[in-house]
Length: 431
Image 1 (cartoon, rainbow, N blue to C red):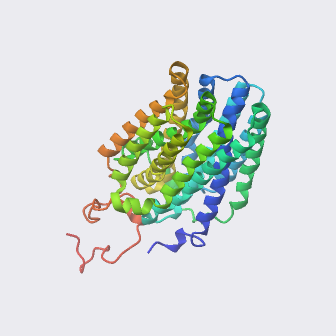
Image 2: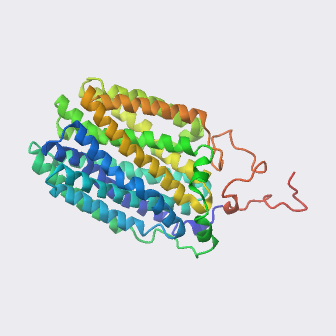
Image 3: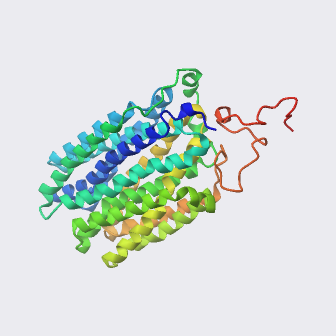
């Protein structure tokens, strides 16, 4: 039985965290398409849209690991309100920006705020969940992101009208207010543990050592590919809509259908893992997502595009929570936040490189071409997932693939709940 001290107040802390994440992510998901429309009204072309989307990830790219180290040394919660304030400020100032350079700068502030919130929140889930609860709790945590991704584009589509300049600015101001609502749920969500040797050991976990853990590089790339697909969909579907004559409200509905399918996936993810196993589930969903991304590039009717986005959303719902569990269970217990930060660094690297590449490709081959690029990226992720199985922990492996715990000592085993027979003694010798 997991130690109750890791779950203060039952699972109420997780519910409050999911609510806060829903509002924070909803604000960002509302702001991202609004930023694209606002930039278009300021004269941006496809390349400029790609650059602005890339700047969103640029500051976080350099800040992730230091923030992870800081969280390993202390509490997780302080990063959450800081993240909310930066998100709200970036949204509001993007709505008042009068140039593409200012839009890019405030988009970077928004991205830094999102990074602060996510590192704090993911570290909290890792710290307060028993190993056997991590797949489930990370899945439920990411439902908050999906709820935000569902509501945000719908709200943006409802607010942005024919006068793109004025209405996109208003949508950005509203998104700032939505972010501020998240502060109301950030109370009593972290159980403060007494300081101990953990703080001294955290600085000794080398970054390269974490990255060498079997399965971690593949997990980081899978996360990068899935997030890049979600990010470019959010940033470029409005551009595709403009090119094909699809109204902003319809584009918002399409993005929300994708997010709703992701929520559905995460609600049934635990039984899917039990049925297929973690590795097979990642490979199958990444492969299908690759085909569906390429299909978005085709000039299909709106209803067919909606069907593809629903299926795509379901497939993209797997990669993020399972990559979190993989990284957490492979990393040393005293450096979990740093490991999660490295995963987020990979995500942000993808968010810098993928939109910039998408902008170049769109400028040369048309606005639908970036989706073909995403298909290739997801196929590579599926191949890496098939070849690499996490070997650093094994605390939540695929069914039928669990190793006998007596055959090896796993990272973090010292924190595992004690079970009968675990203590080797004269009456229970270890073979």
